[in-house]
Length: 486
Image (cartoon, rainbow, N blue to C red; front, side, top):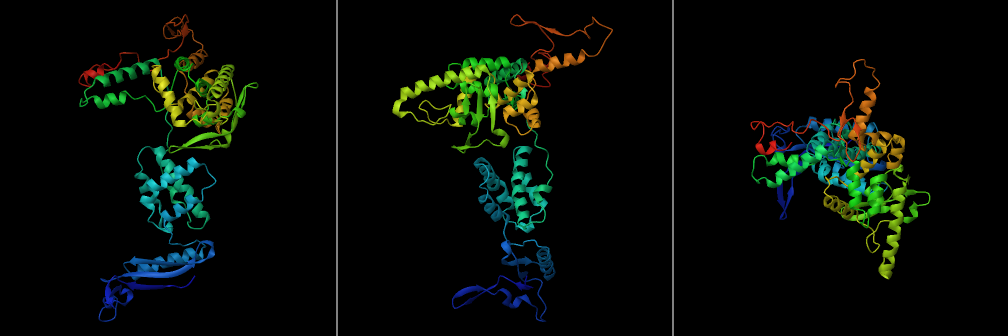
């Protein structure tokens, strides 16, 4: 590294041969009449040469310092970094992130798209102008504070920057990772809730009242909230799922709905299944690929993780549905003749073309709405499949492998909702272990609920929370319109 030099410059100009140019260090105003520096004119700068990326010499120039002492202090810092083997560069955070993104050829296209969105929307606008060696924890914290939406979104934005800066550390551009040192609240996954009879009733009442509410009514905002599902993740009861499958029984993609609902495939995995992946004799489907949506474009990729590549066992009903689907597809192929598009996919459009995942989602919502069911996302069928398996007593490890998770913790924390009757049975079983002498009282007698369809059930009902009608009717607390939500 060369010694470099410190100088003082200003922005004053002069005209020479009809052209205007800066005086720089030649400006006479930089010094007083006695030869000392004028503190009110110009700023200090320094230049030096250090070892850059790849060991090549790289000139470094920094300017805009208010005093010679500040310039010397910054120059000493750079020299100290160079002595410790840290690569010193004038590369900005924005330039580095752009270059870094271009090297990410070993990750999924959807991940690259997510990284690019984070850099474009958050990192570059707030941090892009900073030099890499000037980036501090406070800068990253301020950037994350400007990210809208949820804590989970901030965690993802921070994770992208942390990954890029980890690579910068390996290249010697940073000593520590500022993104890793920022404290953020944990991004909690939303709790999956079951569409119990009580929740469905309240949701329907809220939507009916909202439809009758005037646009400028003071209670409209509260009604709009009440008209939303209780959680972003909702699960149908077994009876509701059966109602959906009955409504979709004659649909051309019935086998897909049946497969997702019972075996928990992701939307992209179901769209990507090929007949070569299906063994109807053995009753299995191998998940080897998926269709992912990049904007509106669709790309075929491998499953999102190593655990995602799996072989899923099929129940007899799903095998029968796939057999009927294959027969129907062969009839479609004959009907279309030369116009048939051969893709090898199990689930295709009428002419054999690949399905667009977004169209599949729209199709699902149309069937569910026509069946009069409360709303869930297509992905929530996957939550329901996990809950059904656990309610049937399937071991957690088997559920994990069926869903293609890397650990059972993800399965239990995210994709399982205990159905109320399962929870009630567990509560009664636990209570039965306690020996009691005082019997025959209401306090110690198992609860019995009205039978349905000729059945008698003991334990909890499908409803949760307080009994119907327990909401306050006090008009001083809420409007009469909201009091009707009971």
